[in-house]
Length: 253
Image (cartoon, rainbow, N blue to C red; front, side, top):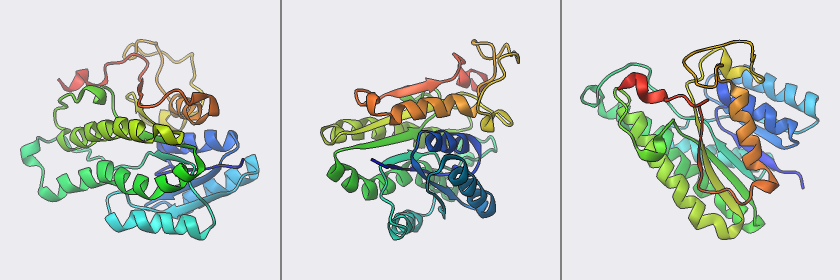
């Protein structure tokens, strides 16, 4: 059966490598973009030609409530149901500041984009998955979000992602009887240009990561690929760190 994967925010970064990996696995692909329409559409054309699959790029802003329904409507218009959701999109505020320094608008932006967005997308996608008796949902967390740790200067992001961790686990229980698995992948501290690298250069060394090399987008993509596989049906409610053994939050304490 031909299945379709929606990978939000996959025109660039970690999501881009995940989208290519799932295309390589034979899934049809839908990516979303906020500003980089040209790059997203070019990427989808590239995947279609390279892997002989169908692919589409659609506009989407995870922080805007109306954007979720619009995205699902456009998916329906192109005749594509969603069998796999990799919810990779989500805002992040780079500026380091305490919770007291956040504005209400910034707080709502982070919660909407990283937590509420998952509720709204899953709410629209789950009926089809239930009807088909099969589905894969993968969320993106941060290292140790499973334990709801304090993360200095990242209060809004940490709160949203910790809530997303709980939602991921809850959905995994509620949807298990329908053949739907729900898991979270927690990337390590993967930075440019490694985010869009597929295979790591194992000759490059770093003392920061215990395994001895930098992490890449490919490290994340391979885990996502496995979780989408038919044979991963016994794995649900898992929160999987892909960090090379690094304690990512240690530098913020």
